Amino acid sequence: MPTSVADMLASANSSVPNLSPQEAAEKICGENVLVVDVRDPTEVEETGKIKGAVNVSRGMLEFRADPESQYHDPAFERGKTVLLYCASGGRSALSGRTLQEMGYGEVYNVGGFKELADAGIETVQVR
Image (cartoon, rainbow, N blue to C red):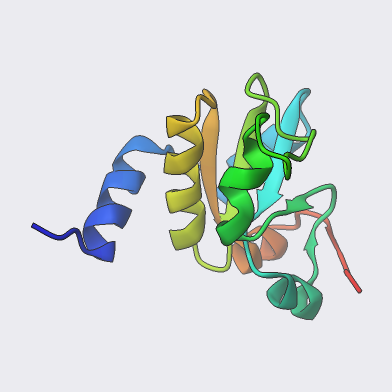
């Protein structure tokens, strides 16, 4: 039986812990933390991103996260705490599930960019 996106999101949300913007702000200040914005570059250019976040669009995540890939981003290390966000939390949930399957242990969905910015987490413009 085919899987729907609703089923995929439900599965991802059941395995990837969600953090509130306040909890995310505390984690961001910690040691050995990678913040990943999985929105498309055009979205990031329009709104900015969380200061210090790495922008890796959802479609490239597996390639950037896999140390065996020619497209690997060295910011991705399996021992780091990974905080993922997108526009509303859906893509970050799916991304979190993917990273868990790839061996990343401490992975969190911190939801949508607007909620994080509204909570006072520092943002930067990207051009």
